[in-house]
Image (cartoon, rainbow, N blue to C red):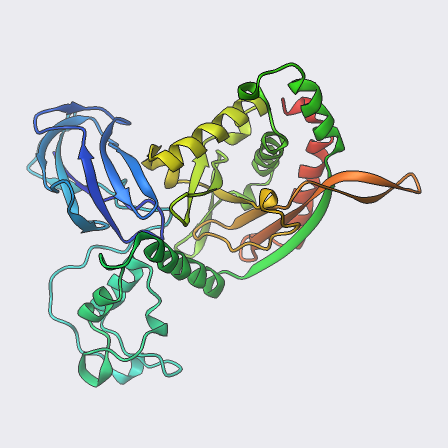
Length: 389
């Protein structure tokens, strides 16, 4: 069986990509999980893996050519699969953190009836609507198009997509804007906050780090991420995806770590099965991902399947965060700066090391009672840092 490998989508804010380097040639045998290409995106260079065993039949995308997400880039002859003259398409590479619409088949623009007008929104043809969804463009906010009666047609949507003339920073901001606008429009957010004492975690880190070189130090963020992951494993209603009108909880906690890129913008890199990591392992993974994200070495699987996202802006000096959920995820956890503040303990006011934790969650899946239990579980875990080591 022949499979067509498509330009992957490394997140719902990605519209185009470019093969920067092929690591395979026609005739090569490849195995599931092997890196076959480096893809240049707005977020930098990302290694693309293959999801099947097979033999490379043909490379369809030349190095350096910009392609839309979902366009064919290679063909793979699967091994161990009977060849019945059937050609399949790889969905693993074409699917982002949320399902992409079906490929658009060539056809003439359909006529648009007045019944499509809602609240003075522009008319749009079916083909243009599909392309807008694919590119993450909110067509409802666009002006009249070039079609009959001012309808938006396919050419109008493509002209408003990410263009090669825009610099990468502007492209990324436009893509992020489309994603968060859709998130706030479609997801009924609710927010909770809790100040969590970190004195025990701070003491554990100080004791552990005594006499160790800088490369082996464990920062308090590693303990915090461990607590988040283990608590989320106990509350599956915050760890999964809302797709096709229903919620799909995930067994592994793939913690999405937001990394600021030097070139501007950000990338969300998944810490796979973070609930299984101790503080030392978590610290190593965090450092490794930051280095690779800024140097262009993340794998495609790391930027595709985060089940929940963490926004840690404490190092930027902010006390509290009210985040926007990345669809199709259903929660985002925010961490403010670690600070010293007055705290009532045993009827006395004492200085306490603490941080403000916030939760943005999808009301279609959970409610405030569930969210409060999650935050309090995180707080309880951080009072026993030795259990997180």
